[in-house]
Length: 178
Image 1 (cartoon, rainbow, N blue to C red):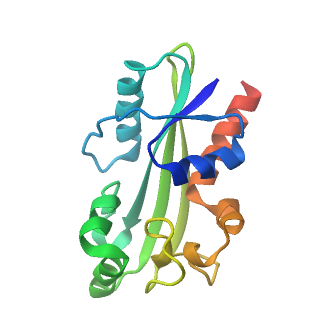
Image 2: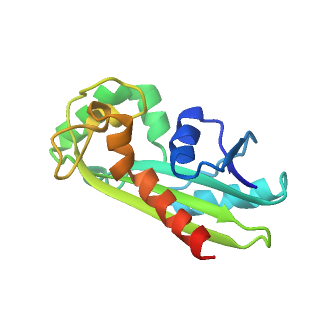
């Protein structure tokens, strides 16, 4: 049985679309402070292995603004909490650089306690908030080559191109060929 350790139901449901056999496991894992998503995921995997046997995944997702040298990155949750999507957009506007990367790092721990990492990155631009706010910074992130923000897409459309689904797709391919 493969578990996804997350307390975020929306993330779990997104991943379950690609990995229908996955089950959610609630373990409140401490998160180290780092601007490196892989470092965060590795620490989560180590900590989770102290609480659960078997195969599982954890992930970290961040929004990396070019004009802020990659910040907020993994700290986006706190930026949104204090500034909201409008405030994060206004940061980019003040700097005059709107390019950003949406990045997810998925970590997989197998039954032998071997760690594997899978990354999905989507390059895009920040725009004034558009669409319904269902998921984090989706209203301000517009992938390159698309006229819509993630919030303006259907869930299916977003999942076809999202950073999380790219990382999960790499994990799924790995598990299939393992």
